[in-house]
Image (tube, rainbow, N blue to C red; front, side, top):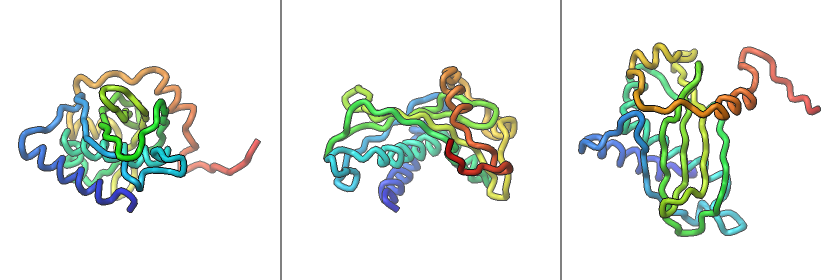
Length: 186
């Protein structure tokens, strides 16, 4: 609930943008403008590191709606879940600072799609996150890429994910939900 009002506002604005003909191609970069609010700040008086991920979710909503992917998913009873993400911080966002969340698809592997989100101030990257997201069915199970691309079209112009992204995804993966994952510290 901590960013629910911002989420609803971003969804509304994205829907209005689509109605006004400002949809996005699948390879486009989506941008939304945000302000660091008092509820985003931690004890050190800058944006809390965990808040970045919540605010990058807003960029993902905008991108999914404006590319048409959200409506295609909704019609088919699909939804996306984040399976892993990695974030790198460069500079801190301060209270009341305005910044853009830039979002785009940066590739896929055999089971998921990759997105990149950036917090940008005056053209300068402050933080970046790489997200690996999987498509699931509300009725249960996963949506394979063949089915996804058949439904929404294979995106053109989306770059191939950098090799390090594939290596990171593999190295950070947990066992399947069908396999045991005991918490054993070495």
